[in-house]
Image (cartoon, rainbow, N blue to C red; front, top):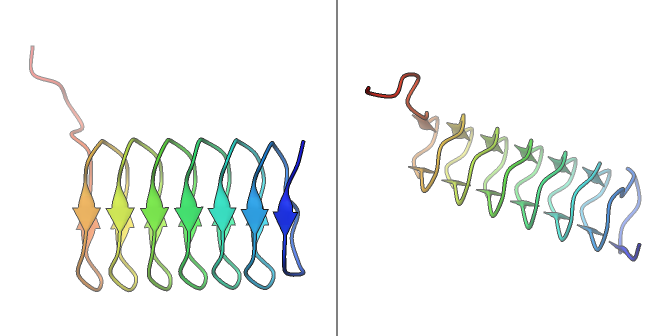
Length: 109
């Protein structure tokens, strides 16, 4: 269980996770990065929270790039606008400020 902790603040749990933002945290998973100040990654695989106060709740290969952006889960989603959010799904982007993207609520039968 190796971690790269180059700042101070929150915990790093899981394996091979990195914290470089002040008061950032990674609370589980593998190869996750919280590099923004007060950023957090809760779990998953190779997720990154780069913006200040950004978060990724889980999933795989998700990115919260700008300040106050968030990705709730899914696969290969990118919230790159300020205060943008993605609630799940795959290959979704929220590139504009205050932008959002959501997965489908229902699947066609």
